[in-house]
Amino acid sequence: EDQVTQSPEALRLQEGESSSLNCSYTVSGLRGLFWYRQDPGKGPEFLFTLYSAGEEKEKERLKATLTKKESFLHITAPKPEDSATYLCAFTGGYQKVTFGTGTKLQVIP
Amino acid sequence: EAQVTQNPRYLITVTGKKLTVTCSQNMNHEYMSWYRQDPGLGLRQIYYSMNVEVTDKGDVPEGYKVSRKEKRNFPLILESPSPNQTSLYFCASSRLTGGAETQYFGPGTRLLVL
Image: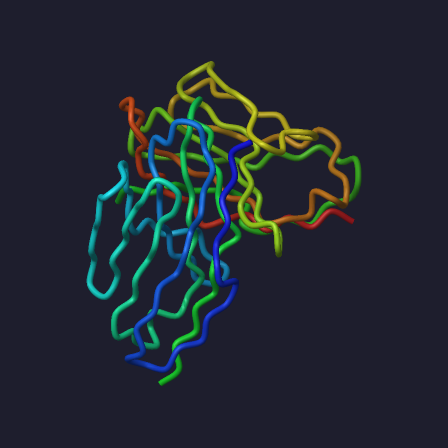
């Protein structure tokens, strides 16, 4: 069965304190691994798509990496505006999309 | 402006009263999908559609119906809502070019079934 697990569930960082969020997945035939950001009461906002092991993508203070079993979202020198829930998702066969339960990030000034 | 719209944004209803939540996208996307989001359970896919007249079940389809008669619209129908369908619902759309394309999400519909 396809599944995805995100850790930690919640993370509290001081402004400027770098860290990583983890997304472990089990899927037959990965077609794409996604990272989204979700603010309270809003729809998820796209951050990255990764397609194959070894791939990396960056955007401002965020960097996403992918291996055959997991993906990491690295946050470098976070700011309070980076506070949000970060969601990982993948598409396997048949175009179904499976989401993790997310990591709620709080960045303290 | 490229967007996915949903209506209504908030809805309170009673058990058994049929309702429809509309979803429309203006990006000419082939793929559209419905999700529900519940605390502790994350986003779960209800139904998805890869093109007009092509729909398929996601992980939690029970109690829901969908239709895709036009490319831009993908309504979610609850024939006989029950309290366990109280949730936050999101519609999403993306291109479908053989790979895994980015989904764009609507603003959400918060549903309360009494």
